[in-house]
Length: 523
Ligand code: KIV
Ligand code: ZN
Image 1 (cartoon, rainbow, N blue to C red):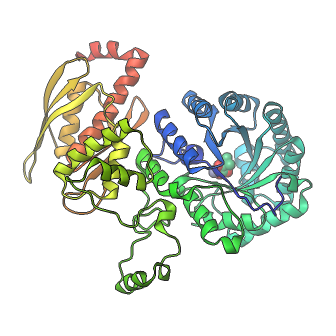
Image 2 (tube, rainbow, N blue to C red):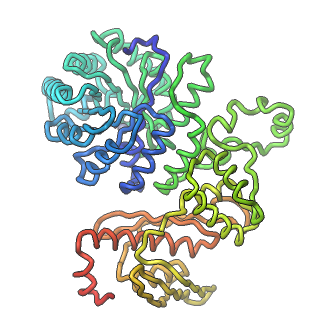
């Protein structure tokens, strides 16, 4: 199954597990489903959907993904204990192809300071856990956490014991992003030479990017015989992140003649998937990020432009179309019709039915009234935000702002409720955004603690849209709201109201709202 002469590298995406663990990257169930659907379209082989023992919400999202997403294997993570493993199995058992992933730390530092367990004890729990997982599921992955800092002889012992207990994939994590390519290559070579039965399982690499080497280390691992790479979209993950899926996949593809390997990834979906993850997490890829950054395919220097005009291969090693970016960034405007809009949407890699297209086209026309020229990024923003903030119960009907240097900012708004009520509220603040937030809180009776506020320009120009992401806390829970508009105060208001609505819907779901409203004297 896993001889190194197998030319296929399996892509294991952990955006929804390791990626989601990154500060500010937590996702709601709906957001996770949206990302999981995009990953299935991208044709990743395995989706690590979460860590079911972490919380009931995590369990629910892994189970929902397992029950709804078709195509990839759906995997859940477990520590080496019976409860975690059974929870993962309950969560993934309905998937077309389920996988249980168990892990335990093996390095001396983790053994002594975190686990306070002896080497033999760790081997014992690893064997018991893999055995239990295999009794439930055919497909079991084992990870010795912090493997890259584990003594190679001991690591070989652990890996051999896990294989004998039935692990079908063994993953070697560089948990703290410490290793370098030559060393990681040697470690894989060492394991291949010293672990009996290793050629009968799939070897995997899981690299973190603390030294900016996660992609290079993953490539070194495949050169030494690994045939699974664990990675995340946009490289999101703990601290400096994980190996970036788009970079490692395009390295294997662009340098196919060097590596002689292939993946099953539909690379034209890389850019749209990157944008979906950025949109959902509010974590935007830097402009100069390889493959999916805004500048990744733009040429400013005259000499480069001249070369490009002669032949694109002079300065381009990949074609933008191959990663789902259009070369033209064609401009649409208010006279563009439904047909041109549909064509552009399809060229951008989005698939939608007539109903969705009509909804987006309506937004497009409204935006075209406010903005002279619409670029690809504007169209993407419409597609990704068309339903955001529409779920109610509250909607903004009118918003007026007064602000200026040396004066106190004020916001006056009129909001309507799905049950027919209308409220007017005015508030002052240090600035227009603070005033709007206060007015929304006072009108709805939902008080939030603002943790982060980010504005990102969707395109350039003085009529560019501003994408606002707010991260807030309510009842010790973190929420993120997101909106796009040509007016950033309006974006901020929509993003804040999106969170308020989510809090209200959640409270209504728990029956908490009625009691709180009485206490607050709210409608
Ligand atoms: O970084 C790590 O070690 C992990 C393991 C759980 C695979 O994420
Ligand atoms: Zn990790």
